[in-house]
Image (cartoon, rainbow, N blue to C red; front, side, top):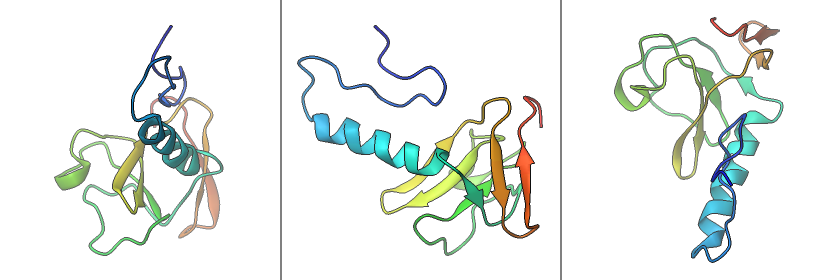
Length: 108
């Protein structure tokens, strides 16, 4: 059995696993970011200076700083720091700044 879900890599609880609440809370934070996502703006290369919990941004193809290594992801600020969701083909994101949906084609 895999230790995470196939589409959004949500962590599964496993038999005998200690600190189940940690894994459960991580899964909830990822679900909160991925379920009906919206973003403030983007794609951006660097994270904003003063994000608020629950705000999200589209990450560019060449990210830097805290976003390095998360190209093309959805970045959401939480009380625990940045959470990243890798898009899946057909995923829709509401783009607040442009008042429109963006759809991930698999390559952009």
